[in-house]
Image (cartoon, rainbow, N blue to C red; front, side, top):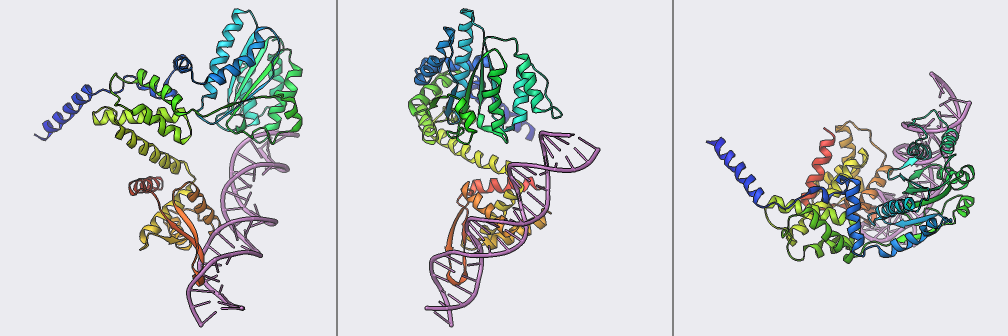
Length: 412
DNA sequence: TGTCCACAGGAAATACGGGGGT
DNA sequence: ACCCCCGTATTTCCTGTGGACA
């Protein structure tokens, strides 16, 4: 009996799902899953919708001289994440590559992705690998040696060499060494005509640079503005068309998604993520994508952000949040002081056999949690009862519970 | 008006750890 | 393999502070 019930339920659910399919091709809701050529197709459609016109114009006119066999300067690109720097430049350089082929001009282009921070050594090593100069080394090879190898593989190449360095500001430590190699040394050692393209999401990345290096970079600057709501709508419509079945999107959904993403940072990736989550919810609920679902998706994403942030946070920060939640909940007024929280923290450290930090360090942790809005803390003076932070948790209780259980799981 | 609470938060000292040089 | 160096995390030490209370 029981079994049959379950069976029927499952079958019913599956049938229901089949009738209410929303997502046709999930991959188009997540760029990571698209292969290069598909990414470029999507991008082409976006460009066709007149998005990023100004930037495209600038970049192409910057590189145009190559086709007449004359030289052009380096290029620095600035823009926040999700403004399409990487894709746009990659696309244009590919195109340029084809055009050069047609014009029988030697052009080679390499893309160095520094989206995860790494020291000078790694960056150079990666660059060398891309140029087929050597394999990956952990260590045991000097910077000098690496540079030498890079130079020697390029020794015979006389055409244009375009190096696109993405997220330059991610080089820790001797950024100067890396850059001055690229900017000052490399051009002198190799016969090719070197054009550097730097991308970064910090406007000030070139500020604390060796002035000599800086002056060698006769840099042309180009700024990618965040997408506005209109651009985002165009981008989203393309995704809707590719990823979803027809007629599953309610009136006004796309503008709403665009508006929500635009209000934040104009980050296209976030907009697409929001659409994806809405679609997922709709499929689960067996309805069209409605405005309410978009709203819910926004909340989900927001909450996920908190949870993944705390999950990847250092253990001490997790403990601090745990103790803050615990202390606040056990207090009568839902407010407690730094001292109370710290006491709770010490207990928790004992329980979970973790080393505990000093009150001073703990106070910094609280400040950090406050900064990331995991909690509220405001300094208040209680006269002879001292001066302290009044700590309270400002999160929705559902999220608070989720956070708490995530943290606790980490300490099992 | 002075005292004193219970911390905040700055500065300097010190511990730590990973990676480079030899 | 070993040592050194440097950036970061944490500790130590310290000065500052607003208002209740006597």
